[in-house]
Image 1 (tube, one colour):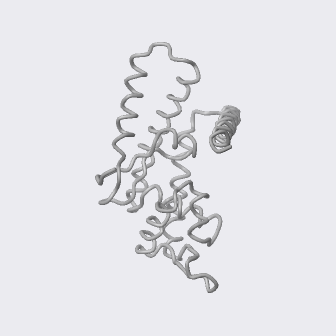
Image 2 (tube, rainbow, N blue to C red; image 1 turned 30 degrees about the horizontal axis):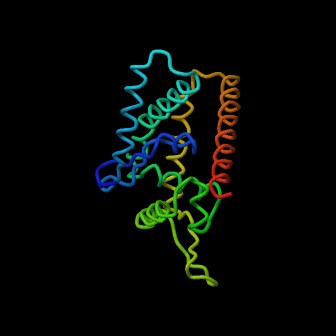
Image 3 (spheres, one colour; image 1 turned 45 degrees about the horizontal axis):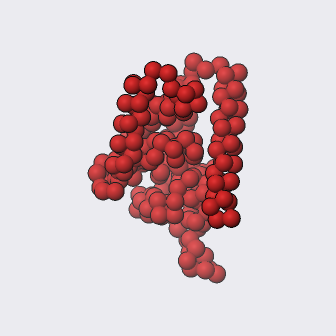
Length: 203
């Protein structure tokens, strides 16, 4: 991995976590994984060359392209506030879940400990969050949304919600319900298969 303008996560990770494809760290210092760029390029070539792909694979590729389109549509809102997508997720969980230790944020927003620490540091420098050391264990720091962070993020979150609703405007409530059910079914199946694979490797 090397430093350029964007950080891309794997398509598999994107679908697993139900989040956005591209992760912006900040406006001047962001990572990109060259292997994922090549990976996505191969996917597009495959879709063009293969006229009749297997049904499940074709559906997965459509899902991936949908995430890419949504990412392209939503990113300008983050960038306008000088925030990255990982910053947004940290602020969102603090807004809705309240103060929590740094190590508890990662599982909530599907970020590894290193990425969470970087995002929290960045938000702290902007004055959007505060960090308080635990009196019993100084290694534990509780992160909270500051008033400045709340005033900045709440309007941004409302715009974000409105944009997502607009992207789904051609989908009926019934279709949304069906889509939720199908995605949950796929996610649970994939999670179960992953657990079985892990168990067989270490069992």
